[in-house]
Amino acid sequence: MVITLFADRRTLDIADIAGRLALALAPRVPTPGVVVATPRALAQQLSDDVSRVIIADGGRPAEVTQALQQLVTQYPVILVAWSGAPDEQMLAACDASDRVLIVSDPSVASLRATQRALKLCTSLGYGIDKVSVVLHGFADDAPLAPGEAAGVLRREIFWVLPGGGAAGEVRRSSYAGLAERLSART
View 1 (tube, rainbow, N blue to C red):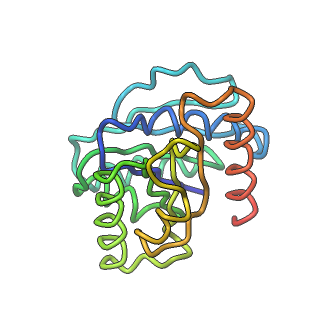
View 2 (view 1 turned 90 degrees about the vertical axis):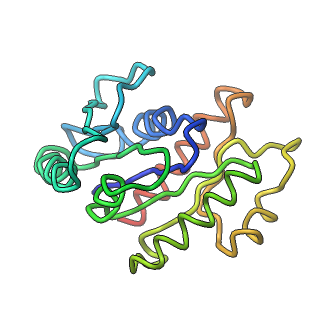
């Protein structure tokens, strides 16, 4: 299964989110486990159950597709972490994915970027079963509640992940819940 996590804003650390999700998914999948594919190196140290690979974000779309096809033969779960403006390489990753998780934070700029990404996914023919919205960093003191974000996006929110200020156990539990929900939909 290939899952692409995408955030239009470069300020959001999508690789960290993918790494934490990979750690939560690893116990749920058979060996060799989970691989996180990013266009840049991950800062976070992952466990032995999670591998890392760098896929070139400057390469041709066909190279991204080929790299993911190769990884599918080696790993049961591939998490692709991509951020920035949508480009041909990111679209190739999304085309090769079973699931696309668009990650948004509570800022107006991020929600607008998420609206654009959802519109792009719809224009590419991706259905609701392929594309989901994950909110990151929504807290009690956030400018918007998740329900309000759903209204703005006109889309059901698949999952809400706490930001870096949340307690470690709260964050681990939230990522475990997301991993469980993703595992149930495979």
